[in-house]
Image (cartoon, rainbow, N blue to C red; front, side, top):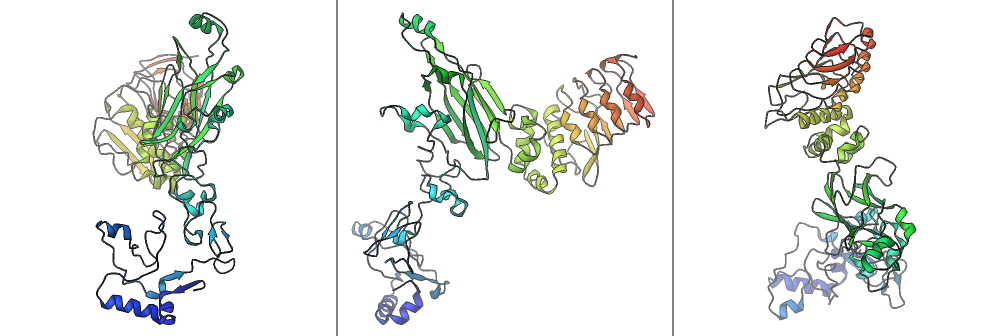
Length: 510
C-alpha cells in the first residue's frame, strides 16, 4: 500500500487478507496477525504494530519456550496502522537523514535503522550527536553518566581528556580506550563540575642521575590516575599520563563533567611514582563550567588521595551556594545540612515556593549539625515543633522570630554557626549555658530585627563585634564568658536598650 493505512481499511479493501484473518481466528489460535517474513534487527522490531511479538522460526525449531501475548482487545482496530516499507521522497521519506535509493529501500545514516530508518539508536549505550538533544531525551540518556544504562557507557566519550592534546597522539599500542567519560553530556538537569590539575612536581635530571647514573633523561611530570564516582556510578576515569613536554608541567588542565543533582561523590587518585620519587600535583573541583568560583574541594594528591563532596538538589544549590561554598563539602556541617535537606522530601518544595523559608531551614539544620542536640528524633520543622523540648521556636507567617535553646541542650562544645543569621526576621535569640566556645560572629549585624540576645554562661572568647550596634536590641546578656577587648562604642547606638549584662568577662572601657 502507499503510505499508512489503518487495519480496518486494509481488511475492507483486501478480501483475501480479511479471509485469512477470519480463518485464523475461527480456528482458535492466539495469533491475530500474520505477515510476510521480516528481518529482525535486535530489539528494534521485537514487537509488531499491534503489540504482538513476532513469531521466531528459530525458537520454534529448537523447541524453545515462548509465550506470546495476545492482542490488546481494547484498542480500536482502526488505530493500528500498517506502514509501507518501500520509500519515496514524498509520502514515505527515509527518516533521520536517510536516503531513498532507486530500489525504494533506504540507506540509513545517523544511526537510524529498520523500515524507513524509523528506529533511532537511542538507549544503546553510545552517544550519538544527531540524537543528543531534548527531543530525543539526550539520545535516550546515552550521552550522560547516570542516565546511560549499557555496559559500554562512557567508553571513548572524551576526545581530548583534560585538553591534553598529546594524549591521543600516542602510538597505537597505548590503551587510549581506557579513558571513560561523557564529554558530550548536554542534559541541563545535570550539575556541571570542573576538575583542574596543576602545580605539577617535575622529575628532573637529578632524579634521572640518582636512578640511572646519568643525566640523559629529559624532565617530565605526570598526572595521577583519576576516578570520579557518584552514587556508585563512574563519571570519569583517566589513567596516569606522563607529560613529556616540560612546559606542560607549568600549565593547568581542566575537564568538565556532569553528575545528577543530589549526588554524593568521591574523587580518588593514585599518585605516580618512579623509583623512590613520587610526583605530586594538586587537583581541585569547582561547581560550574569553569574555575572562576572558589573550589568546592581541593588538595594535593600526595596528602589527600580521596576527596569527598556532594551536590545538593538543583534548587538548593542555586539558593545556598550564594551563602557558602561549603555546602558541597560533606566533611563540613554546611555540607551535611545541604545533603540532608536534599533528601528530606520537603525542602526542595520550599526552595521553589519560598527561598527565604528554605534558608531558615538550612540555618537550623546547620545548628543541629554543629551542636548535636540530645535527641535521636530531631527534625528541623521550623514552626511545627522540633521533636525535643530543649529547642523552642516561635514564628510569624511561617518565619522564625524566636529561637531558644534550653541550657545544656547539646552533646558537644561548638561554635555559633554564622548561618543562624540567615534567620532574617529573628527577634529573640537565646543560647545561654550551652558551652559555645567560638567568638561572637560579626554577621550578627544582619539581624536588624533582633530585640533580645542572650549568650551568657558559655565559653565565648574574642571581642564584642561592633556590628551588634546595628540591631534594635532592648536586652543584651553576654555575662560569664571569656570576652576581651574594649566595649564597642556602637553599643551607644542602641536607643531601645533597657538591660545590658557584661560582667564576668575581661572587657575594658575606652
